[in-house]
Figure 1: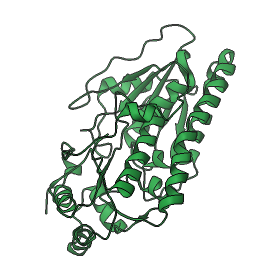
Figure 2: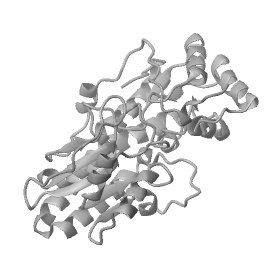
Figure 3: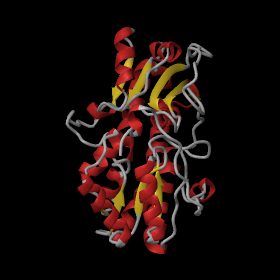
Figure 4: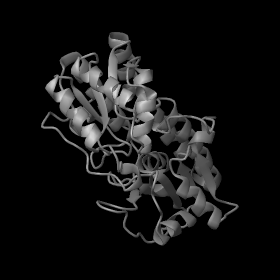
Length: 334
């Protein structure tokens, strides 16, 4: 195979005619943080659109940017009405590995008082913009550094790890309190709400682990690998295959054959694939899974919206995994 998608942008995700997990179902199982949310989005369907620099509505409203919309969502939940948060990456057709920021996006980032970015090479454009518009007062949270992850960390999808967002939220609350000391009590209160709202997700992970620890699954990419590990599921797909698909490199014939056998011989109980990025290889694997009656679970690199916040999104992914394993029902799309 040749001409893989990382160098030329993402292709539309493959969606099978199978049931979806509804946001309403997830909302019924979670007590979300009761804080006002104000998230602006840089980009919509198609290529990221030019956006105007964020303008403060009042002197007390902090301008913040999340490189990915899941981080912008958490900023908004902690900051509430005192923060205007803009998400740069939220378009399912946009590849963070090849993203090039427009001048208007650069202006949004340059105006930010608080920035949260992933690191690990996932959103390097952010550092480029920040270096070009230095500010001594700007607070920048690099999640990789916050978690103490070395540059050699193989999987950059840090937001799927249960310990990531509590750490991010705490760091956001701390920095917002420095930027706006008068509203420190509100930020601390919102942080408590946010932490409490994650309990439904962590309980669901614990229940999945208790019931299905060691269950074999296959994946196309390491998008949800941290979640699979937390749930005690065994990913049978060679990491070399996952990394090649993630980086747009043709996997070796041996790895492709191994992946096909996992599905065709029904050696796994679920097939987890990246909804946002498919090509002829992943589409052929989805077809094999369908023929072999292996349930398919779709996962995302950016938070699906509307209808989800970070907590509901993560909980929906756990429900989808449990439904696939326990009931053999696919959830290829949230």
